[in-house]
Length: 132
Image (cartoon, rainbow, N blue to C red; front, side):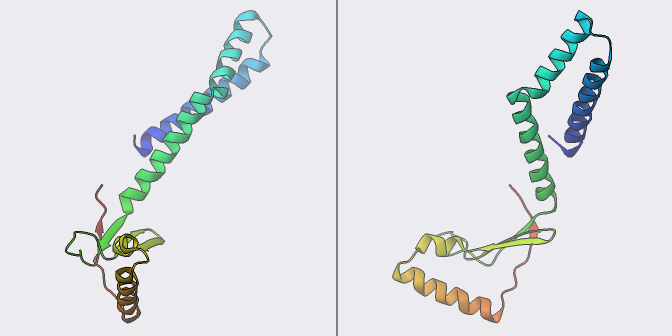
């Protein structure tokens, strides 16, 4: 789904709510009451609400992905990234998959010390468009 799909979905929901409100103002004849009940049932349906929530999350993720950039300092011989930066607009996340892999072992403490020293001096990481 794209952001355009989300806007269409929002517009459709708003139109349904408007139609529902209009039907409530009409004389209460069986056809009008039945249609109003169907619209209210749809708007209150947990599956419809969940679908809207998923669509909102997907659109937010797509907006983040569209401007997200990532970079890696280098890979260890095992193929694990030493340091990863993910940035989008005014937010950046720095992590070390290698440090997470080593954990609190002696090698992990040694690696964390080396990494801290590198960061204290400054590390330049080229950021590129994020690929999934």
